Image 1: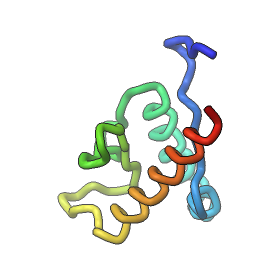
Image 2 (image 1 turned 180 degrees about the vertical axis):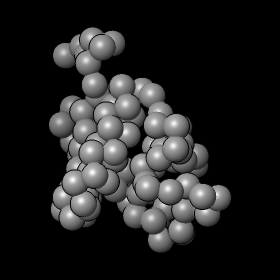
Image 3 (image 1 turned 60 degrees about the vertical axis):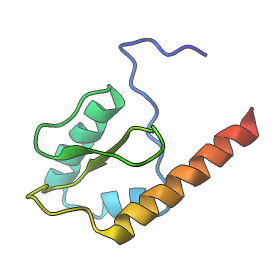
Amino acid sequence: MVRRADEPRPLIWRGASKTDFMAFPPTAQREMGYALFLAQMGERHSTMAKTLGGFGGATVIEVRESHDGNATPRAEIDLIEKRLKDLIKEKEGRQ
């Protein structure tokens, strides 16, 4: 199936990510939801998203309320890496 350029990429929730997202206040959900939509469209929210490197050529965009110069904690990077590997294995199993 070919995705049209104006269609968003699929948003795949992993682990407790959707539950965590739904626990945010409505205002935060709205802003973060918009940042997620922009990522699906291949764009980046100007203040809430940053591209993470080191994932074997995969584009990983981190969306969070603040990127105030703090590095992403190692535990979060490890979790992102595990979830990405699991997703790749799942996709390979479907082919």
